[in-house]
Length: 564
View (cartoon, rainbow, N blue to C red):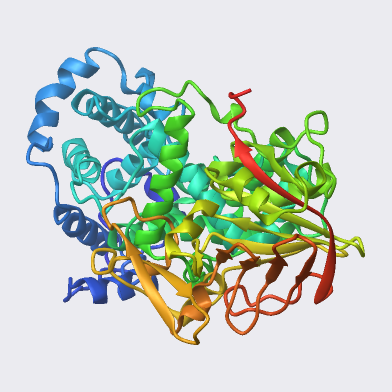
């Protein structure tokens, strides 16, 4: 068998050791369904020549902006931009944010070529203001390019993708930050054990999650990153979330029971990723990644948009980062012993709750909206104090000293849209929990059991809410579909019945959280008595004694820490 024809930028000895070449194969089909399966199987992973052919074809087929720099542009500008500098001494563009160029078995000529290509990209893409993933992408593409100009053209096509549903790499600080927040939200839902560990050992867990792209674009060994990139080119950005979640799951498993220090956990994960070959193969990593039953691509886009909106409200723009990651108000900062007081929970318990809320609201501090001990035992007053606030946290303490509650995604004023009937509203971000005698959270049943539903086209349905009348039949009402559809709105899912989407309801004589086969929480209009049981929406166990007397009720909102 002839040795592989590596490009002139590759250190042959290092490459033979990193990814042994098993010879060329042929690829007869380039249709997407077959490509997805072949990419996941690693069909071209051990054939240097075939991987280069596939990359060439996949990148060529990316729909790009009309004016996208090509190889000819690179040849025209590289001399002017590089000048007489040696490649090794060239500075990196500001948009890589001090990210180092991974070696990826490149020789000195290859490492210098990456710097030249990045500078030329910076010249041609002034709108790219923050893209720390790009050095790794260019370094990998250089393996499968005949020269620098061809590699430049491939990288430009990835940056110039014009399909809004096919995001490939973050190109602004705002996009990068919102991706980090989105990853944190996904960890919170799909890696709960790892998330609890991160919260326990990190002063600011968002700082840990802000490193997630570095795990992939820089720390992963070449053979692993190339396998991830194979699938990424076929399936898109969602693959990156999957693999990063899988990495965190393996890290948690490997470090279970071992002490972790808050000032070293970021470095511990980076070290684990660099040495990941000691723990898991590339195949097992991808197998774990695709075993995670993640939200649909559309739902993740909606979550990303919601996080971007929250960051804009914090003053973060596309081109500047005036509010850095270090200023995020997470659990230990937002819920501080000096400025928090509740008649129901202590600081530690509120931090537990705050670690569960979506990351765009973890930026905020808790704000007491209603307390039965201050405002009286009146459901009418509860609504009055809470209306105009979204989301809210409901806390209940029973006379038996049990503590339970709910995170409620939607403004209580939505109850007024049902014409006096008891109407259910809210989204799949709602969850219920108990804190005493033990801590347990119950999320929307669809999150852990996506097989119950299939996503539907967002354009094909109107936003639906379920109303419940005294008759056994349910009626539907809809509101204008021109407003931004919220993340995990039930209209996005084909549910077997409405009982899986009965999140929150309020009338003059009662308040209900969760429905279908029972109610997670029911509170009477005098805030005196309540009951709890299993419900289909959250698939929960009773949150306290099934029938209980109420000692205290509180509702908490979310306040921007900059607003005093």
